[in-house]
Image (cartoon, rainbow, N blue to C red; front, side, top):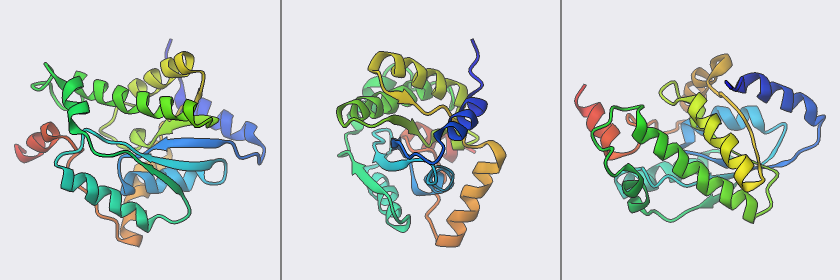
Amino acid sequence: MMIDSYNKYLELLASLNGKKPTLLLQACCGPCSSAVLEQLKPYFEITILYYNPNTYPEAEYEKRYNEFSKLDGFKMIKIDYDHNEFLDVAKGLEAEIEGGARCYKCYELRLQKTATLAKELAFDYFSTTLSISPHKNAKWINEIGLKLEVEMGVKFLYSDFKKKEGYKRSIEISKEIGLYRQDYCGCEYSLRNNNNH
């Protein structure tokens, strides 16, 4: 069954009626997070989870993390860099096209960690900023989130943050506050793909 993630998202926001549940939000970078945080701040008490073992090299991981200091008013949890976690799930998928099965495994890795921590720390919801990118498969992201919601017993915030010009808004905010916008997704395979074009 296909999930109409954007309608479910709007229905949920309408149902909150001013109550602010807690949300653990896995975030890939400041620019993608900016517009998502702007959308969600009125509805949730948000803690950002910076967990991106796919990012390569480590200096890039730290550079992206440091940009979050320009986004005020949010708690953060940072997971120490361990690129081997990503390489383990990408094994055998190195030659996959960008946006293919390797990316699915990467979404799954990051959402699994987010759901696990959300349960351990008693958050009401978990989600990710990933769906704001036009290069990320929101259908896959939401399918993985739904599966983890059932397995872990923590609510997943369905979303497709690129809707209603969300991605465009992230670009505008990035320019307004001077956020560093990287030119590749994060892993060495996306970097290779970017360098080949």
